[in-house]
Length: 94
Image (cartoon, rainbow, N blue to C red; front, side, top):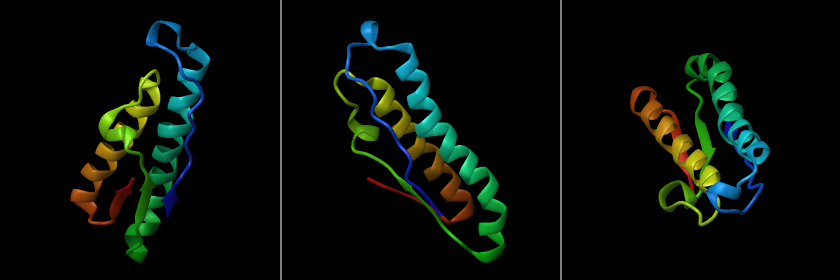
């Protein structure tokens, strides 16, 4: 399974960043990957399948004027790497 959904909706300093864009970024970049993983994992474990997550350099270094995007990509990387240590089937690329 490939978690490849992600959005980069706005560029603004934190104090000006639109709340709607923040909420949508978290929903698309984190919640969608979490739900896909949650429901696919039992099937993947039975079939020895794998999970690949499309990451971003922003998950390591952040993005100027878009901390929500970098934050979500960092969380995706950390969450799936931690899961991969247990299940040996998760990889984040990017």
